[in-house]
Length: 379
Length: 98
Image (tube, each protein chain N blue to C red):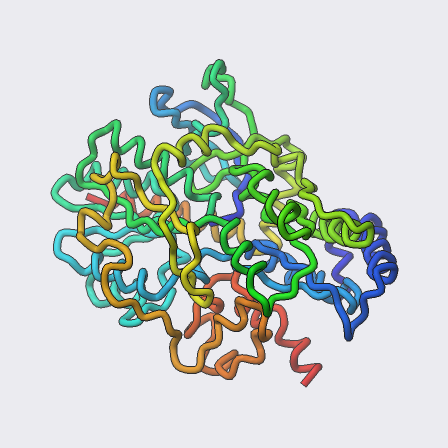
C-alpha cells in the first residue's frame, strides 16, 4: 500500500518527507546510528502505525513510543483496588470502556463484572453522576483515569457533585500528568532520546509552558503536534531542524487548536480540586515523583480512597508483571514489542496479558494490528 | 478517550449547569461547555459552534474545516466509531438504569 495516497494532501506529505530525509542526512544520522525521537502520546503511536510513518521516514530516524497511553500505564495494584471497591455490596462502579480489560493481579474489571460486580461502562463522568442521582440508595464510584485531557472533566464533575450535594458519588482517582514521566525518562541513563513530539490535546489543556524544562534543563527539542499524519510529519521535521541547528526549544505545531497558555477554565478547575501526590506508580516505570493527582481534602467527600478506606500506598504493593510479560522494557524503549516472548502468543488484543496490548494506543497493540505483515517479512 | 471528537453545538440544555446538546456524526449527546465559555460570553452564543469533545466535555473551539479534517483522521484510526459506540452504549444503559 502506498500510505501517502491516504494523506489529506499527498503532495505536501511527500514534500515534508523529502525535507525530513534531507535534514536527517545533514545531521549525519544513519540506520546504524539513528536519531531517537519519542512520540509521547499513544494517539500519535496509533497514527504513526496506521499511516506507516515509521516506514516512510528514513532509517536514520527511529520512533520511540512513549508512556502516553493512560490505560497502558495503570498499575495492577490500582486495578486490584478498583475491583475491591466494585465487589463491595451496594456499589455501582463506573468506568471508561478502555479500562475494562486491563489485567489486575486477581482479575480485570471485565472478569469482576462477569463474576457479578455491578460495573458499568460510561462515556462520560457526567453519566456516572447522573447514575448517582437516579440511584440514591447506592454508592456510585467513577474510576477516574487519564492524562490532562480527562483530568479537567473529572474535576468539573466533582465541582458539580459538590454543588448538588450528591453524597453517594465519588471518584477513585488515578489521574496522572505528562511532564513528570518525561523528566523520569530523561533522567534514566539508559534512555538516549534526541527530541520529542508532544501530545496536542494535552497542551490544549495545560498549554506548552510545562515543557520548558525539557528545552532549558535537558537541552532537548519538543514540538507539540496535531494528530493528522501531515501534522505529525511536520512536527518531526521541526524537531529535526532544531537538532540540526543546535537549538532546543518548545515549539507549537498545532497552534490552530492549542493556545500557548492552554485552557484557563480547565487549569483553574484542576487546581481547585486536585493536588499532586508525592509519587504515583506507573506500570513498567515504577513510582514517579509528583506524577499523580489526588483529590484535595476539601473535596474528600467525593474521594473513593477516603470513603472506602483504600488510600494509596498504605499496604504492600505488587509492582511486577504477569509471567513473561515485558511491558516495562517495551515502555522504556529497551525492546521492541515483538521481542517480548509473549507477543502474539500468550498476549493478544483479544486476550491481553500486558497492558500495552489492551488499548489501540498501546505500542504492542499497534505492532500487532499494523505490524504483523512487516514482521513476517523480516523474519 | 484521549483524542477528542469534533461536535457541533445545536442547542443549550441547561444554562445554569453549562450543559448543551452537541451533534457528533449524527448522534446527539449532552455535554458540558464550561471550558469553552469565556467570562463575558452568553452561553447561547455557542449554538452553531464546533468544538473538540472529550468524554462529554467541550474542550476547545475549532473551525468547521478543522472539524472535518479531524473527523477524517479519527474515522481512519477507528477512533470515531469507538466514540460513537461508547455514546450509544451509555445511552442504552441509562435508558434502563434505575
